[in-house]
Length: 504
Image 1 (cartoon, rainbow, N blue to C red):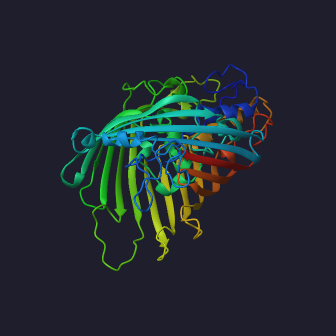
Image 2 (cartoon, one colour):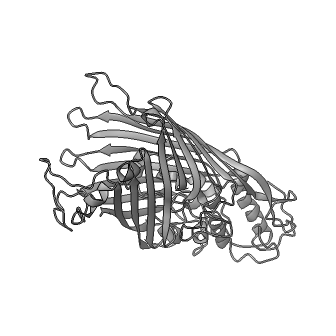
């Protein structure tokens, strides 16, 4: 343990050693908030390649609003032919509303329930259909985020309970152009405002869950400036994807070092509308190697049966920004010391490595839609002196079409683990010693790790409508942080929720 000067006075050690510490509970919550809540990842929304809804015999289902809802892929159908007209000019549109209610039955800062919602809108332009330019795709998307941020207000977890939770806002999300090159489209380059979680560190089977960490992982959420360029944020950059042989793909992306132009506060508030296009930060680099089977263009032996598909990813990210030390100041003293300058030691750069796997392990020979897949993702960084979270793991099992009468339903069970770095835990111990020396009463939190379990069922009520009950149980919320209301440790939490997705 670093030396703590016995003259330490009550206060917020990193900011004002001469100030007063109100309670150790408030201190622990402030330490959690200083890192910022985890970013999220919204439910997938694919732009339709065709505007038409058709029956098995090829006839159109409907053309008007709210017609043919039993079979239509969209609530609004073909919008009196508007989708078809737009598709002739290479334009595709998609609109999806995700709404949910979450409530904690046990544990948490308090027991409560909250509503939150997300409206996603995407417009894409295929340049070949629009004006004969092969291989080009233009994309623009926007978000409308509404309701309360349940996890921030109630659970204080590191691995937040919903992938759509964010600050209320109407914001531009992505704005990019992608162009294909080489024979068989083996190279494509994307440039513009991008959300990295749409292509890097992706577990496709994790998209069935509600918890944030099955989307954008906990390590970059807390360790990168502004949480990294991931929902609901994005950053200007350029990404190249090269497929040297059919099963392999190499992705390399270089982006602005932060989705916000400065670190003065919540990045979502600094760039509230998503239109700042920051270019003033050091580069953020992502690189990923992907292996996919069966691959695009790959050949299968006759009579071999349906293959058990899988995708493996190995990657790294590196950020060139300057990072604060979590525990010591620029003179080598503990930040909790009364003699500390309050200025953290500076570190140049930060990086992490990761591995991701999605593997189908069983498929029904008579019904190829019925299958079981497992997935996992590990990510770590050895530079714990500048990172709140130094290791994380997500994994689970997904059962597609669990009932023969429900071919489009999915049931899934998963878990997540986040380990608090030794430097962050050491800073907690320093603060606890300082508070003991100064006679400050109350629980002294020393964060270690947080684990959660999740079980969910995605019920496909209509082609355009999903309903999803969900249950999550969290061990050691926040890594074991104090409850600002009671002063004791926040107890383990059981969170129940219900989500619905509607495709317009």
